[in-house]
Amino acid sequence: MAAVPGGNCSSSPHLKPPSPSSSRNQLQLQHQSVSSMIKQGFIPDPVFLNPLSPPPNFRASPNPTLFEMMAIEQARESAKPDSDGRKNLQDRISSALSRAPFRTAARWGIADVKLTLAAVGDDDDDDSPEEGFRVSVDVHRRVLAARSRFFAERLRRSGPHSVEILDCDDVAAYLEAIVLMYLHPDELKTSLLEWDVSKVLSLLKICSAVMFEDGIASCLEFLEAVPWSEEEQDSVVTRLNELRIDASRTDPVLQRLISSEPSTSSTPDEVFLKLSSGVLDAKDEKARRQMKALVFDLLRDDRNNNSSSSSSKKRQAGAAYGVAMRRLFCRCLDSLIACLSAVSDSPEENRGARMAEIGRRADNLQWIVGILIDRKMGEEVARVWADQEELAALHSRVPAMYRHEISRVTAQLCVSIGKGEVLAPKETRVRLLSTWLEALYDDFAWMRAAMDRKGIEEGLCRTVLTLPLAEQQAVLLRWLDRYVDGGDGCPDMRRAFEIWWRRAFVKQYSVQNQMQITLSDAPE
Image 1 (cartoon, rainbow, N blue to C red):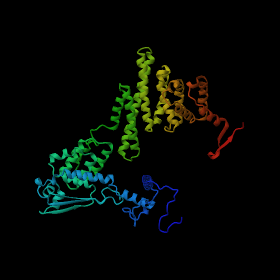
Image 2: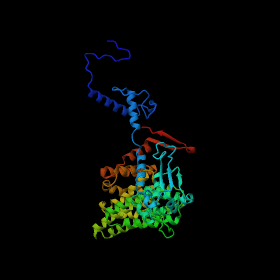
Image 3: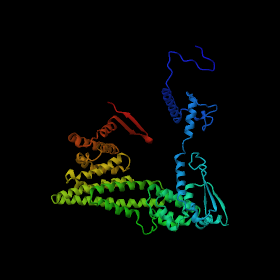
Image 4: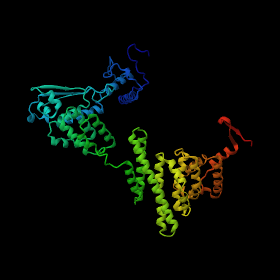
């Protein structure tokens, strides 16, 4: 059947028209699909001539087109309540007004000042919750002029006034400052108890701007007494520096961050020595481990801060730390030697307690060595450790189950040398392996359970390969004898052995005139 121009086609007798419920369900699904497409950005907003209203000639239809559904959805989105930021601002305004004393006419009389607070949001942020926000209140000249020098200068004449403050950073904070002016000075601090640090800092800025002295005092008392988070303490210092309030008033607040008597305070090295001595001598093993980890992290943060600063004062503090750490390293080393000497002289006397003390002192030494390496002082540690022939001799007289903690210091240094974290001279590296490598082989079966075996083996390989070729050969041939006899009880240094072999017999380098290096493959 032909279609009637401008009309609707007749339904075919073989097709059943859809039921009203199925049409509604289909329309609902179409609306949901369009809504999802708009939210996800698949349909651009420029389609709409006016986002706040349907397009021209819009009319409701039982079967709306896609364009009509898009317009309906856009209007629904635009009609949603204000953003969370603006709603929060309105809630703060409502809360301040609900407890505003100036709204009690019976006590304060007729208001004679119309105060308007206007906020102009960030020009670069069109979504600012305070964009174009204004609030007007009726207040009393005698109260504002008595509590604020700012208002006293502007409300000198009697009679009604109209005051407008533009470009307010925080309209709610301004209004709350006005409310506080109606309170007795003794009530101000109590009124801040339910506030947080950020809100009080905003209020402090307003009180300083309008020269509300009692408000400033109450804010400073609050900040002095309330705990701060690390983020909040940065905000406190920044805000007080910005406001340039007299130091006599801000000192009580900042004393938890800045010492007011630097001449009598302890120096960093003195504090570090006292702290470290307490940690090393701790009786509780769990607490000792926890404090070691904490102090190590704190010193790492301090090193990172000092390395990025050009301040001579911080460099001097870093040098003081270095002196204190050297003293502590020598102290730990001497105590370990004394403990091993006592065990060697009287092997059966209090054997269990002495052996436990060896492990404890060796663990303390590892901690200090780790700190020194982290602070780029590993070269000196490697040199001192390489010269400990007396300690190496005493070490061989103690059972491996007690002494293996000492060999972990050697492993620490080799891993750091292998990573390029310690740039020890050739002579130091040679002496280090000559003095301690055999002891490490002896203790490796005990060490591997408590340390990263692969890391130790990689560090040993890399350290050996930094030696002159002849020294590499001597070390690796000796290792081969130990490895074929000890198996897993000896570190796996096959990778270093393979590289040394290629250097020595496969690829041969020679130095000619003018320091030219040539490479030739040896015949098979």
